[in-house]
Length: 99
Image (cartoon, rainbow, N blue to C red):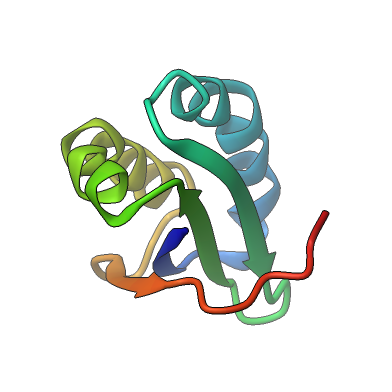
């Protein structure tokens, strides 16, 4: 399994709106992409720092999803009033204990 981490600094006052938009609009789109395994969103409500972790069946599936998910990053940044561009990192998942 592989994971893509996207970090954004959002306006803390707009976090709720960004989370709602992600849950209602973006996650259903992700579920339609081949190889998608799951999604976790970590937030610091005081600073507005968010880290989204998407999980993919394989490195190939993660790479093939890049174009499909890129617009979602832009929408999240706009909805949440991001200060700057998102940073994106990619990893192999070496250990996962979530059922």
